[in-house]
Image (spheres, rainbow, N blue to C red):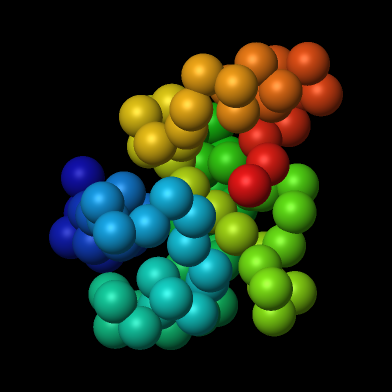
Length: 87
């Protein structure tokens, strides 16, 4: 695993947050926003995007495992019904 990818995963799974914006990940890792976006787009097998944007209209991301760990039972049921995670 590259150091860059490790930093990105660590930021996505930061226990302070359930979902992360590209800007938030960029600030935490020091990586350019476009690099963060490119890496996320290449790993959609383990990273998911919320169906609901942030209050500022930004896309929100997390890893599948982090979502499972941070979501309530009802959120998991709702997500499975609509087949998309939400906040």
